Image (cartoon, rainbow, N blue to C red; front, top):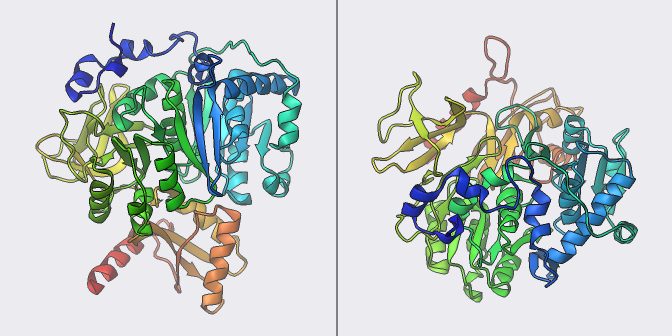
Amino acid sequence: MPKLTDYTRYADAQQFANSRALWELFDGNRERLNIAHECIIRHADGCGRTAVRVAHADGTDEILSFDEIAAGSARFAHWLQANGIRPGDRIAFMLQPSLPFYLSLFGAMLAGAISVPLFTLFGPDGLRLRVDDCKPKLLITSADKLEMAGEIEGLRVVVADAGLLEEIRRFPQTFEVATRADDLACFQYTSGTTRELPAAVKHTHRALVTLMFAALYGTGIRPGDEFFCPSSPAWGHGLWHGTLAPLGLGVTTGTFSGRFDAVRLMKALQDYRITNLSAAATHYRMMKNSGKAGDFKFSIKKLSYTGEPIDPATLEFIDRIFHVPACSMYGTTEIGVVLVNYPGSSDYLVKPGSLGKAVPGLKLQVQNPDGTQAAPGVIGELMVWRRDRWETTKDLARMDEDGYFYHAGRADDVIISAGWTMSAVEIENTVLKHPDVKEVAVIGVPDATRGQVAKAFVVSDRPPSEEFVDELKTFTRERLSQHEFPRQIAFVSELPKTPAGKVHRKVLRDREAAAAAASA
């Protein structure tokens, strides 16, 4: 009997995609399920089939098999138990994609613990905020992060080095799982799309099943694909769509490790003969800006992007270099992917710049301020029907007469820069720790390369200078994250406030927009 993965047409998705068909793709059921088993263990058949290809920034390749990850994850799960870790405990790990990363991710889940991947570029403030939120029993990280992590009182830190790998080898290479489908499996962090400070979105093992609709129709993933996603697996796209979804279907996936380099990425796409690429809009923009794409031969048949809209010049680059349509997929860490463009569907028209249409089974609507449905072409708040009510996506959108949705901006104070979601409040809180800063407000402003960048408006008694600007950038970057700092800084005498005394960021955004229009 055909499975959902046997169908590729848009019409088939509308006819056959349902919950029962999704569950047929997995070994587990609505009572018993384990992500590590579904993604790794059941595909480990002793044949050494490749699970993950890691393209390291230094030019080396790390090829990991299902067999190797399965045995190592089981040993890691036993090691966790031997170290007092119990089901429900949080295991945080701040590692680049590598064998220790995947052993931590899947080993914790096998043991019934909760995996908490953390971005490797977090500074002490960024790390502390998340540790304080999830309270892990253990943090596994690299040697270069040991000193910073060790400053967090009460946090047990283990270095993922050759010594740790040697230590876990004494444990059995099989592990009997006992998790239920509704047990918590992973805490996924976002930078404040619904709250001012980072909050973990808590996923159960069942989330792998619900994710698969978005994967099948957002990235077009199918058995037989050679998949690659350069997004960091510490964030939603890289973890769920770049790692768990393909591995859950037994598909070989690939990722990038280290400081991103567009030429290194394109070499990996060529060498691995990648047929299905899913990346952030910025990755494509950086490939275009490198001017080196013509030096490589690609095998891309399906291509998707997420994080932000793609500019027309980059869309033209994709058409010219890859010869396949650029398929947007839209969602947030909280609500998941809800709009897709069905890559690989021969009967679906991809409209350039569109967010696409709803994932099968979902209902979305653009609404006016009074809650009524907006007419085609009218901008309103994008809402998704969940739990018998409309829930906001915190974004603005419009829908055309053919049912395609188009992004029309953010509805809150979140900043999306080069595909990263950043919290204005989180940046402000770190800048305010500088002894010479009295007040600060941060907003997103347009940027030709990154889509948006963070701009800080600083009130200080210290005279403005380029030295002061550089000092504030470095101060924030080193404490929060290498990507999360104000790339533009303006010194002001005071900040606009609401009657309640809160900083009025909208006034700042309106001023910036007016200034940009005047100079255009």
